[in-house]
Image (cartoon, rainbow, N blue to C red; front, side, top):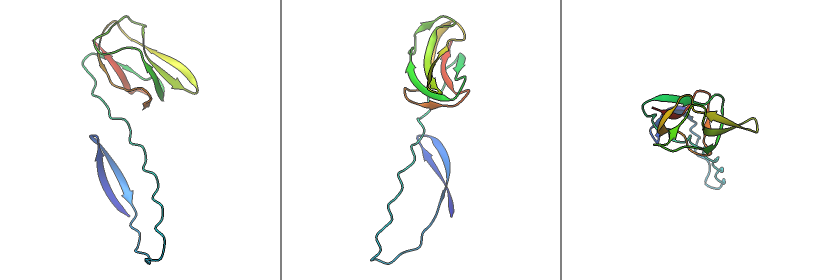
Length: 117
């Protein structure tokens, strides 16, 4: 096994690669496994108050864009978790300074979804 570091879209991954011995020319090569899906690139959070994911899930819809004015309690993102649609609401009034996720992206708890200034 070899340990390697691979960087994809600015994110570094530690991977282990198994080196297989050479086989006879008559043997059919083994089918390579499908590559694992790389996580979506993370956009840096803008200045202001972050709105974080309260649970792990999948981003179904983004209700705002940068520059939109929001009031406290306005829905900003819809997350799907446990086969339910869960609105994530603005934690304060202000202007959206950044949208840090994309539609269909999987997120973990405390992932910054948007920032409000």
